[in-house]
Amino acid sequence: MIRLDRVSKSFGSVEALQDVSLTVAAGEFVAIVGASGCGKSTLLRLVAGLVPTTAGRVVLGGTAVTEPRADTAMVFQAATLLPWADVLRNVTFPLRLMRKAKGKMLGDTEARARALLATAGLAGFEHRLPRELSGGMQQRVAICRALLQDPRVLLMDEPFGALDALTREEMSLELLRIWQGREMAVVFVTHSIPEAVLLADRVVVMSPRPGRIAEIIEVGLPRPRSFEQEGSPAFQRAAQRIRALIYGGRVAHAA
Ligand SMILES: Nc1ncnc2c1ncn2[C@@H]1O[C@H](COP(=O)(O)OP(=O)(O)OP(=O)(O)O)[C@@H](O)[C@H]1O
Image (cartoon, rainbow, N blue to C red; front, side, top):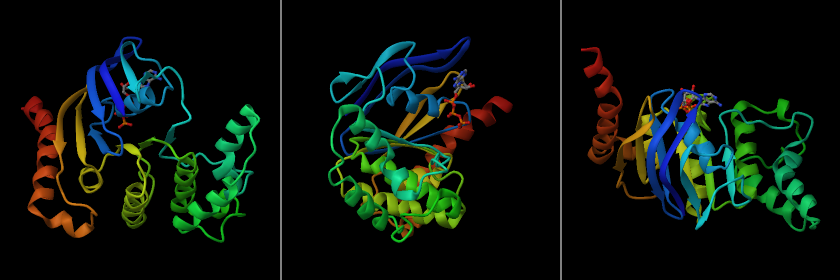
């Protein structure tokens, strides 16, 4: 579904990514972890078509990515909602924009938006403004907005980073539930190693300056996932390996 072919990206003299090759299958859940500044967000933005590569190419479903696409949606750490629009209008906004551009009718968009909001525990909040919602609820609205596009690729950049620990855990299981019912590839950037292992089929560990793939860990835990699995040997092994990759280099460097 997604293929990065020897991708490099520089911003002036800063080499954010160097020679990164990665394939993500349709319907696969891939997490990306690594120290701050190793190029995780840059990788997502390249796949989203928001920035061009310096070298190499990004291919999505067989075609080169050169601009943002309708079958790709992105969720950021901040919910980035329109403050003056209610929840329903926020969720339907990108589709209304796209269809207006194409002169199409809205059809069942509103009904699908209401159903999605209900799945995300937001039934009854359709006509609230963003400022009337908690941070976790706002982020759920942003996730519903992305899902309403029915994307084949969902790119998530620390989507739960600004949430409290309890909301974060609840949202991660909610995300898995929604993902399991769809054929949607997810690329999920996080700073949390347990979150990466709990959610993903594979965890891509990046090394910094320049950003490269250090190793890809196959998680191999059965689905559906649950928090009980965090105590299992397979979970611990994967988390330990990722920690060793991230911190090992730094300790060796300091010594
Ligand atoms: N638009 C830009 N202009 C200049 N430099 C940039 C730009 N975007 C990213 N960089 C640089 O590229 C490198 C990688 O940044 P990126 O945001 O991709 O890292 P990250 O791994 O997502 O970091 P964090 O975990 O802190 O969010 C950094 O050195 C950053 O300063």
